[in-house]
Image (cartoon, rainbow, N blue to C red):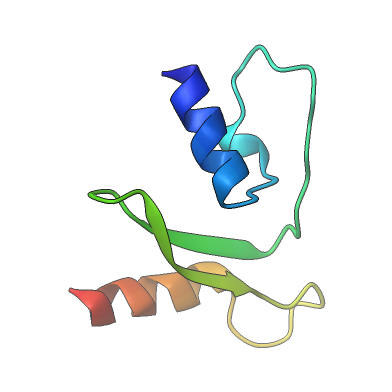
Length: 72
């Protein structure tokens, strides 16, 4: 399972800690204010947003919620 997850993260160039194995000694940080929507049937990223690091405008999380509701 860990190998599959690592392969998927590498395929989509996801440098975030949430898809790293717990025992990993490598920590890759991306932009803090980033949200992804993943189609769990295909494991493909269908939406990505890099929000403002300055705190201006809506957060990427609130934009992701709006996008999810639009996709339903």
